[in-house]
Amino acid sequence: MTGRQARHPLFGQMSRRSMLAGAAAGVVAPMAATALGGGRAAAAVRDRSTPSVRGETKRVTLYAEELPGGLYGYGLEPGKATIPGPVLELWEGDTLEIDLVNNTDRRLSIHPHGVEYDTESDGSPLNDSFNEPGETRTYVWRTRPQSQGPDGFWLPGSAGYWHYHDHALGSDHGTEGIAKGLYGALVVRREGDLLPDRQFTIVFNDMTINNKVAPDLPVLVADLGERVEFIAIGHGSNFHTFHLHAHRWADNRTGYLMGPDDRSRIIDNRDLNPGDSFGFQVIAGDGVGPGAWMYHCHVQSHSETGMNGVFLVRNADGSMPEGAQEAIDRYRQHGGGGH
Image 1 (cartoon, rainbow, N blue to C red):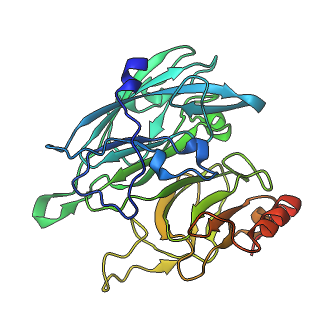
Image 2 (cartoon, helix red, strand yellow):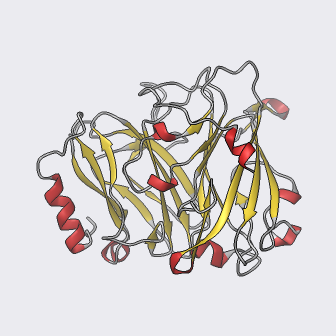
């Protein structure tokens, strides 16, 4: 297990607005530890050398572990499981082999959305695909680029903002596992996609965000002008909408426009229902400047009961903008409140 992880070097800071074109297939971005904090996407574990071929096979080890409070999480190292789990990243055409180590006394699994796999890697008890307590099992996920299908139609590739989750803890549907934190983001990028400077995973899980509620959510932090990627995922049994104050994105695969004639709808609020996921990138503070900006579920009763957090855009030099600390203090004292 340790040897496999050692083959995934930790690379330095990515350049702002750098392009994916010509970069190698990404594997794992361990953003979960800072998914509701101030971590840079520069902390991502990705291969940035120029590949000679596409369609590489990557391997990573995940550890499923019990956390305080009866929760569970996935992690890249023993004793470092988080909620949400680490962001897994691939390029279209790549294969990811996941060695899932079950360090709990419960049956569990890992099931992906948006990629391809055999029944043995389904992660569901229906296909006898899960980990018994203490068991290590390998799951294989495949991706592919767009291709021309019959009669001139094009078949979709795998690129998108997807997610993964347990499908076996507590029942054959993994309802308990998801409720207790066994989930994470899965990103499949296409050549030409933009890489972010910072990356945050936000999961609306029943009436929580990443299994927390305001005012206990860490503040998301970026500097003015940085490219920030949000990955939004829905779980549980409730209808939600995701709203980000003062920032907008295009309602398409990436969240940004492909040119002046791109007619994608521009939004700042989108439905986020159970099993759904989407992602987008924004330039922090573009047009509005630095400050403490809210994000929250726009179902008002949900926001009022704690489904809200703060996206802090600092000054370009990393200093606190005027009035931002006071806004954060008010959030901590009053638990936010949606608008």
